[in-house]
Length: 462
Image: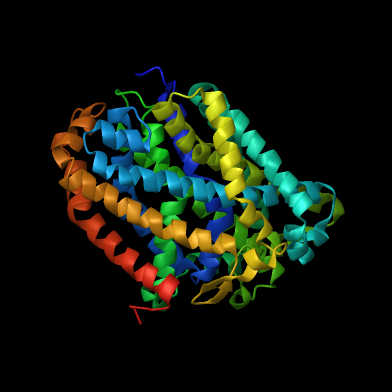
């Protein structure tokens, strides 16, 4: 391995990469995407996409990173295909844009933790006032960016890996504890039914299909350069296939149990009337504080504080990986010291995120000035739409590059290091078919469908 640093163990890589995937995308975004997508139909499509479409993209990204030991742009240069480094450039751009608004939402989560332990359950009723309090939410966002920068500055094994080994097991214990508790509440079964029994009529709905694919790419950190970067720190002796499978299972599993935690709480709040479920950020930041308040002052503080601490921890595992991508680029390509690269990129990303910070009520322009087919939108929503489709496009380009430019044979050679029997395995046949035909066709078609629907209001699925 190079002197850039590397993961000290296989479990360190898996937990760090899973931490990149597991974050607000699973615990904040996944439940309200499920709500917007109509419940279990969304979950079913999401699971299919995660294993059939996203797993091959993940394997390809990790293999390219490990082969080159470079950042997302340097990787394509090192392979000898400089024109294709546009994939890496798009990935870094996406990571920077996502972190710019992700850090804002992470600040909200941390702020709600403070509010819950202070017993201020009424914050959910004034969510708009909370997000428009620029001093308060700006301060929380600065604290979160500082924490992220500190961990990334510590390096791969001393910062990122060490954090993942502590936070990932903690996250799992916290989520499972809240699942058990939520199942004891009245009407919990109605929430579980909503979550697990699909309405088959929604399986062809463009919003359900597009939302499931966007969520799968977002939550698995695909197309944003994170897995190329983490792969560049991976030992040649590690099995990319089994590691990628475990990362996918970690991510999907935590998203799934996050839903089991969330919807019994929502059903309790709604008296079992699941037709009244509303998606969006309010599912967590508006609905849940009211649920915690009904538990009484002491239990409500404990459960509410516990939940938003969990949300903050989940956010941190992802913000760290998002910052590592541009930092690795600056370190590799410009030979800047890691500590200096971290300071530079943290400041740049925080500045880029200011419109998202003030676009939730503080600034009327950034809160309402962006026209989308569903009506006027805030800046954060617009950036989220843009990054969602760019991640899909990035995935399409990555598998197309691996299949037709770098060639499947070279990909197989890299994967075989750490998996000697790969070339004779069924997994190779599946990957060859997926990256040559299935992924490019499906991702290409869905990319077009989602762009037309989200930005032009054209629904090709009727």
